[in-house]
Image (cartoon, rainbow, N blue to C red; front, side, top):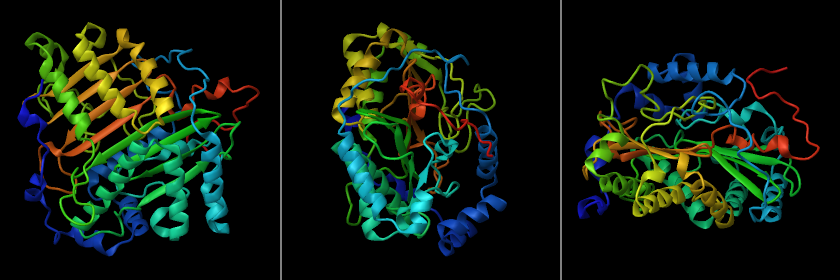
Length: 430
């Protein structure tokens, strides 16, 4: 088990890595709003590596949707329509209240077709690369409150608090770098796909820096996948939201699991010993995703299994895996979370846990849990706005994917009786 030192929360260590705000990057950022900032980035890109990644994303977007797989082949029959007990009518009613509060221009922007490929254009950097729907810091307080009411009605109470925590930390980072017009508590977009309904498929995307939620509904069933949640730093240490912290439980449980293995198991579970290991093949690490494999625009990635099977672990170790998965399902309403967690446990015979890095109490690390029905990733990152060149525990990225075409509820859509998919899931337009 993790030692007492590993249980202690990290404080304000990040402050030794505060950036020089007089350099051109931040001087320009402080003068620009989100749209000018994004337009300037798209023209030439600073930093150039991120602009190059964005151009690669656009190429990936042109590929027809297939889904993340472990071997390049989508396995059929893994998902089914089922009653998950979510309060769909309440969610529909609250969403309709939001729609009724919009002006004509906002109404024309907020709703896309249920099968629109724009589902796939979410991304987690602060750049407003895809400006869909409405942006919360550009609408009235009434509209903003209505959007947040949709989130509150959809997510579990603890999932809602986690999302709000990520938003507040984003606002805190914007204050640290004196660029609140680009990054603030409400620098997030909300867009509907389809018409809110208790009987037909629909959904929404809520996305921005370090928080991206793609949510699909059909009757009392919900899919929250893919989602991304991060924080830099992951603690607010001053101001009205002082003490806000997210993602520490996922970190603690992952380290406890790794430290519980015998040396032979640790060797088997470790894919790479170093966070940016010379043994990594080209493309295994990049500046933005770093060790993550399933981030934005990686809808069709092939991710081979690595590590050891959960079914080979001891009962206490399997309970730690369950605890980690529970955290990654925190956004789901409790009834749906239980259904999903039971399903994940039924696949422990084909669920792998893998690790990158060392496993001392202060060591940064990456881990992944992967099965035919879920992929979760956890990664400590180097600085993007902060200046730490090496991964640190105060900058965390996490995500969840549903492989084998489960993302965006895609595997469920053909199962809906009498439904015809009208739009191709690719980046082409009529």
